[in-house]
Image 1 (spheres, rainbow, N blue to C red):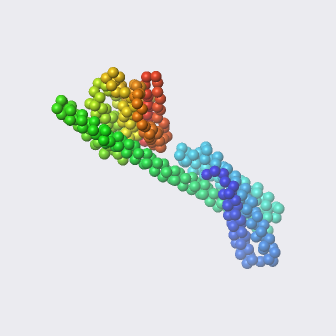
Image 2: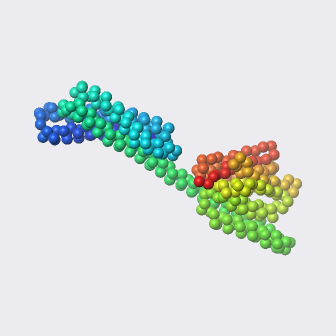
Image 3: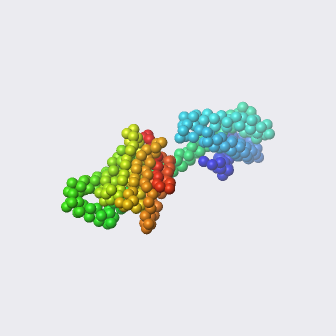
Length: 347
């Protein structure tokens, strides 16, 4: 919560109510003895006193809470933050109120001319209650904001995942893809029945993976590799020796996590935007480097540029940011396009 003068003024008015209430209690104990001018005078002085004192204390306490926010955030130092709220803010409020109460007593702003001790105890009581209320409002607002951000973040993540699933399914089942796949199967049935069976098996694996894992945000790298290998196998049957692929990753990295369908998206982009011919075979490699999955492909851009919305990479960036506050890296060299996806450790 940011420092707010408006909130401080609200607390000031709450201080007026508390001071008047204390004055009423004191007069009630004395059966409201005294002339009307004296009674009204006490109410007026106590109202002013309550407002001034609470505004001063609230200003300092809210400033201290802001300082505590920076150095003792809940997400990293919850226990120390709890102790600070429980001890530091009331202690500071009391330290501030002690000299202020003494000053207001000696300038005549006291409760019905009671003793200094009574005056300080009354002010300290109000201060303690106001401090509890201030800390409660401050921290309540913090957790409400956190909860609200969490809802928005989950909603955005779900939207991005729906977009990713939609794009993946759309690209797989669009008429051109199905036409090419069915033509390939038709030709292979006569030329190489074993290859045709292999093609159909890989095709089934792709759809089985999509159907079984479509609701998950993150997948084991092991599972993503199984899926992308099936996708590459399909493309290998289609392009033959024009497509060269390799996957080399250490076994100990396979249980780390990456966003769903991220590798397939990169491989598909490589095939979509580059020439894949016998004269210029497209080479795609998947390796690991410094805690990142590295997908490289030879850069041989098609002469005719295909229409691209850029949704894929933007979607991948957004999902990484929301899931792990990490950023993938994309860049070109003279001969290659390189994508680096950070591996996410299991919680």
